[in-house]
Length: 471
Image (tube, rainbow, N blue to C red; front, side, top):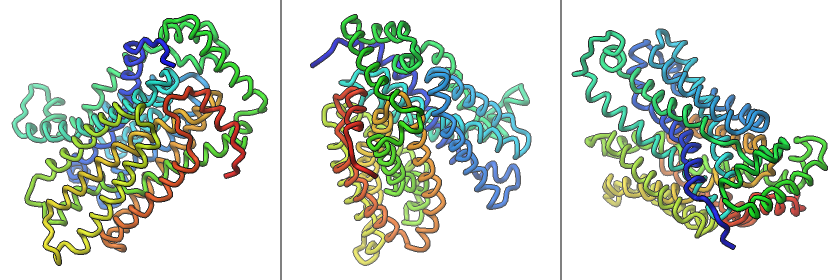
């Protein structure tokens, strides 16, 4: 049944929360344009250069660990505000750092912001969204990440192109945007961070979190702004309160997560989060340019190919956003992961037989772009949707933190292992392995995950309560 919804208001709230994803994407991708400059500036060796790239992940993991407790304790809104402060401080701190250790410190602070928003932003969108629109609204967060990636590539390109001719009467500005342009690249992220910080104060708190805290009047007011119907407000409040009443039978949040159904949900969430990384997503995004160079595309502009991947990623995410609630999460996974397997196998075949079959490097580029398309329309589009809607209201923040921590652990492992795999297994074996890892992901979604499209968060919670499976 279609329920009345003030979709303009909900869309505004979702876009504001999704700004956290834009900062996530920008802060993650901007590093690629600064590595050589920072290495030269501070005379870094290989280990120090690697620490510069990877230190933000330490902050990420710390941010994910505290995000659940923070969001369940002080609320989704104030947790987002804290993340915005971290991003702002990180951007300014990186731009003004005088020593390498200072730069590392501010990069870790920015990483903590990434970790926090990767939990709380999709969580907030999920809790304020009507069931009929939740998939596409939560997908705004993933879209914002792809926009952040592309923005970082373009900002890096623009600032680098103009750094040689930049002049300013201010010695500081000349240093940031001229002589040491890497400072401008990192510091530019402070601008959208300030916007995110300001507009976050305009957000209402999540009505479902308010009900957990027994602030029914405030929750009802927010629900009314979303639905515009007192009857629907009463229904939403009562349904959430009923599920919370069932949850109170457990003595603690930890015991609630140990219930058979919810324990299964946590394990499944962790499994799809970490498996998604071993299907090659970040390996392609991080090491794609070097793979292109090794395959004979070095004569072209590497930034062009990087930006082309960014454009395909963003456009495909828009398509996924438009269809995710109509097609359903699971069908997108079946379609996309099948295409990923085919694309990865074709990439592996290229590296095995490119010389024997006289395959051009353009063939490889097409396979990579196909892989990005199938990834963006499936696992990248649904992962934050799945994780934000599959846990009970009372402990949703903590449960999502556990699953998101698995995602970041997978990201760290694939970042460390990919160079080793490319050398040991060779590119062909590496991509065949990525293709193989797609199979358990699809089986988990097929056999263990419910189709959540069109279902309220409370209906999804009931599904897990009814599960007797021990995982």
